[in-house]
Every structure is written in C-alpha cells, then in structure tokens.
Length: 127
Image 1 (cartoon, rainbow, N blue to C red):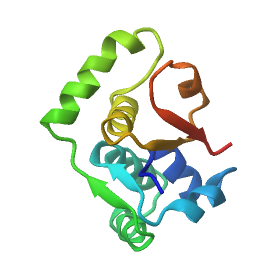
Image 2 (image 1 turned 90 degrees about the horizontal axis):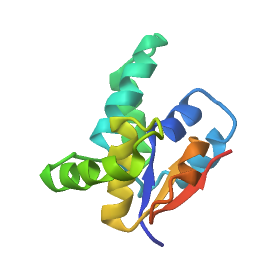
Image 3 (image 1 turned 180 degrees about the vertical axis):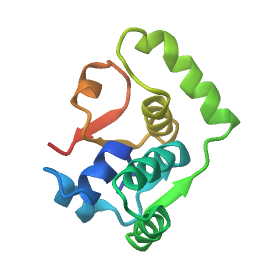
Image 4 (image 1 turned 90 degrees about the vertical axis):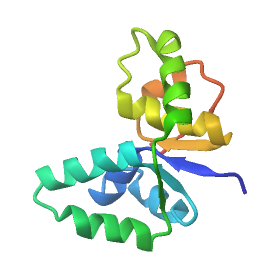
C-alpha cells in the first residue's frame, strides 16, 4: 500500500463527526500528517473548547505519524506558488500537497477545490 498523507480538513471531519469523517478513521493507521497541518488541527479544536494535547494523543493512537516541515519541503512548497496563483490555497494546503508530491503519496482531503489544481499528486476526497 502506498503512503497516505492526510490533510487537516480530513482530520477535522473525523474529529467533529462530519460527513466523510468515518472514512478517515478507517485509513489512519500508517498515515502521515504534516506538522503544519497538525498546527491547524490543534488550533481549530482549541477554538471549539477541546484539549489539543488530548487530540494529538488520540491521533498518535490511531497510527498517524506527524512529519516535520523541513527545508526540502519548504522548497517544494515554495515552487508550488506559481502553479497555484489565484487558487486560494493556504500555506497549510501547500504543506500538505508538497508532502504528497515528495512522498509520491495519496493525499486525503475534504477540500474539493484541490481536484482542479492540476498537480501531479493523487488526491482523494472524503466527501
């Protein structure tokens, strides 16, 4: 099985019991989450009154590995800017997409606009 990179939007759908969240729970074991996307997840759960440390522990128990955003990935992410101009993609979006490109992985997301980005990465929608 190939590597699976999970976007913050998919993790949040699972945590908040949104449509498609059950699909995410089924594929977590062995998946990776970029540290930038972890920041997004922890910030959003805290805003809803949840304990970020507890959420991080639960993600680990589900088998999700958090991977640091390093210099190599920064370069890949920066190179995406010209391809993504006008697409309303965030830094966290580019962090996830660049990890998918680097690992030649499938990227799991709830963000349907990613399907039209024209990147050479396997993007799967949860809904």
